[in-house]
Length: 356
Ligand code: CUA
Image (cartoon, rainbow, N blue to C red):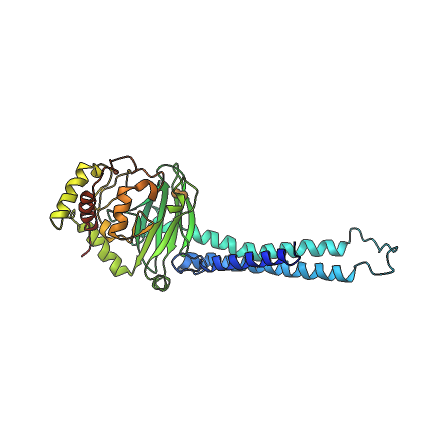
């Protein structure tokens, strides 16, 4: 094999990795483009720890190279055994004290940030802040439910929050362990079946604008075959628009079919028994499947496809290949569905809206 070949391989691998990582810098998905108080804190801790580690690597590498060059065996020295040093008090002190100092430099901001991030007093009963928005998050195989207990609003797959203020979360799971993560805004925290985890996040208006008003949320705990597809979307809104959204949700009536085709779709929705699992009323909670009251306002299909009629039909027709292991598969005769039925159903679903 040619001598330069392993080198070529190494450099092309590095090049490929750099190219791949360059794709990670999206403002709606990247921890490296923080969009809020929590993300800022976490980002500066990452910078601090990385700088300390890089500093250690540089110092150790310089020492290593120096020793290698300075003390290498020279011609004519073959028979000489250099002076053997054992238990140097000075050296022992240096390499004990320096790591301790580095650890202190790192530990102080980490502990202080940990306490700040754990401060959920505004959501506790005794110290309750009446204005603070609280969201109960339930993670399910493979979808997310968001309930606003003080506002009487329930939604699924899309989290709506006010910008530039702390939003408080109660996190739990209905089936197996999942993990709630909005990479550019902060997290992550596990959602468990037997206890409720609490934390807060802040969504900055500036970061929201950079991300074009939409962040991606992820499940960050391996939970089954569709773990990687268990996404949700986050739409932060200025406080007035958020209040408007809440009042629209609170006053929403169940959407009436907009035309003949949608009316057929509504009938099929009952006939195929979709209604048994999916609520279509903004305030109704069902543990079985996402609430569809404002389905027509979503930004993705099944949390993963672009929001188009074609993708909706693809999802209804064959949910298993879109999201393996999901609970909709097998609950109706999706294979027997005709094109006409799919047209009607999607017309009905795409027009389930709460805002005009
Ligand atoms: Cu839910 Cu991974």
